[in-house]
Length: 207
Image (cartoon, rainbow, N blue to C red; front, top):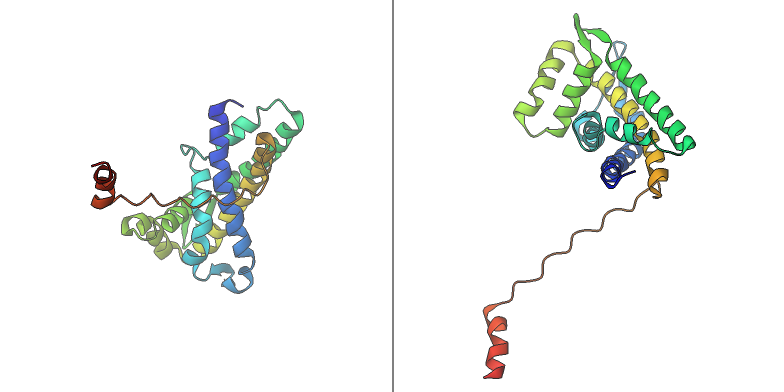
């Protein structure tokens, strides 16, 4: 990989790390956070529970993002190592299978809606939860299609995240990095600005 390709794959890996932690957190809550209503799954407190997952999934979902799945997939599928290429192909096939499902239409509330439309609105609403304009498309969809949207979008989001983790395993091997990256060190605070006395003290000593 070229330095630019490595940089792109590492950007993808940072999002994959966040997705892995978010999925692990959700796994312990799913038994009490979901319920079946009229044949559909409803999700309690979807914003609080899923926002942590939606943020990295959205970054990898957007093709123009530096951390996009599509970009890293193309890089890793072109590696010289045949085993890594095969693994990258399998992860890409898993992701593409979810995308094909998203391309299909579902009838909700008497209206046909594509999965991509649901997921895009769901991800945007989670990421821009504190913006009225950012959540408006999702709120409108929820009002017209019903709560079933939440369960479907949540499942698709988790499926996308699992495919991201498959590709992250390939990326880790290709870069020679551990699968679980250490948490970044917190930024050190800047040194205190010297006071007026400390700036003049050396001159006073010389005088």
